[in-house]
Length: 322
Image (cartoon, rainbow, N blue to C red; front, side, top):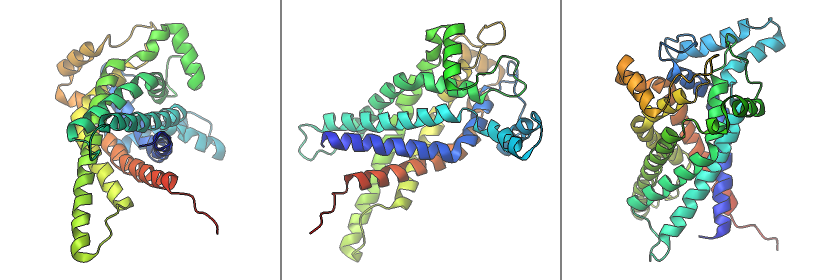
């Protein structure tokens, strides 16, 4: 496994991350607003379901501005709040993730005759990559979360964008505030990525083995196609989401902007867990799950389709002219 292959991995991951965000960002906004709406401290409107949330966010953003064709489309930007940091965060995260994941697999494969990794080593590779990515990108996700939670009715002076948010956070709350939610973020990244990539790799082996058996009997093509990648990406994502979703809720609630008195709504992860369990029960840890699945299952399919096909393109040897 050459060093150039690692950069091909990173490039494919970055392109996949960008494609994913561009396709499903409005559902990410909806999910984040559901996650922090605990019914007590949140100043956000109450949404009945995902469809109602999409309609309400768009309608309120439009009504908050004078109506004209241009401003109407600008009004819909509520559904794309935090899009810029989301694009940067997803592109960087996926690029780094695939890079670190590939490097970890390369290291674990050294000295092995067949260079095939066990599920445990796939798990370790994914966990290592997730931890490194979380430490690198937490400030970006913090800003994305806060921008997504801004509404026309927001009482605090709004952030005008990514750079303004970073400067304001550092000025008002100190540099450490950029790493709010990093503890549940680390648990989330390590466990979520480890579960997803282990499931992806193991399911991929099953499909490849099944196709290779068909070759012998039916002369079928054993190579995986975009449909295979979509099924692998979506199914592995469902398993990861269901098992790790509460950590997303905990992180989002910790990353909210403090109120006008600059006192955080939640002190730390344990405080979030106690308060959520006490006032909302188990259901509170799964707020926004529907929007999350609607966003992440197709998003993961898109990610792996783009990643695998970009990787194939980058690894394809250049054609030579006679």
